[in-house]
Length: 357
Image 1: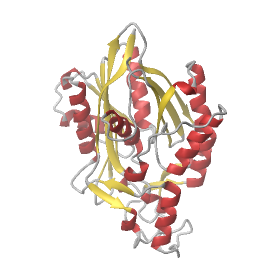
Image 2: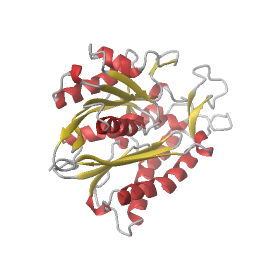
Image 3: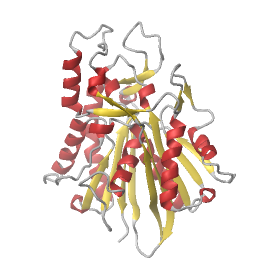
Image 4: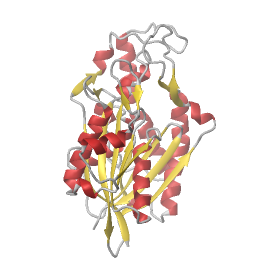
């Protein structure tokens, strides 16, 4: 049988570290368009209590999203030991393309995937670049698409990248700006023939586009005098929180049941991370559906020191664990893991992945 297997992974994190203390003297506004009366110390302290985020990474002004996507891709390709000219597809998940550091103008032409192909120096005209804009679940959805290409026998090697520079897409006067960060992660997914199944075992995607469409969108700044970008991340935090806890755990349970896999067989759950409190609650609710407690260390966390890197979160975490850089978490032969994400519009997806014996 043909298996879809991750043969190499990589990530890129910007050098610039921004701590919560850097926001203490920042002026935040409320939804009513007026400055918040609370002190910066109180705002940042409450923010950390809820999200557990202490710091995040921002790209420097001379670096674009396509640049960090390329750096993560290079590492994944090197780890996979493949010739770049042998890649059939490059799929890049992102939400805002390249964003000008000054004007905050979004640039998606040429596409990020085309720029990555160019940056890698690929001459193969049959290597097709695809962009995936699917909210924060974009990288997981790109991995699913790559798997479908392989299973359909129209591809043997696919580079799957997730990269965003959300620090340039936020409303600087919204407290939610402290959640978002920059980063890139990538894997090479290859077709491998064997007499037993491993790699991607199964997957599922759900798309909610009724009232959920407005939970995460672009909009004006909550500061009426802001003269920067007229399109900034606008998040209805409470709506998102309630949606996630209601819909993600049963979606994962449904995928496990469809795959005839028990939750006890799952060794790790790699969740997209925007808020540690929300992620902890998701895991607790998932295991509560089985009337069992969540195992210790089943859900690796990076949000505390990386923030919400959107499409880069899951592949970055995968690579950190694979390189033994996220102790105590490790992958072992025959392990089964879940990679899952949720985000605009609202989309939910998950992949069950099994390592080779």
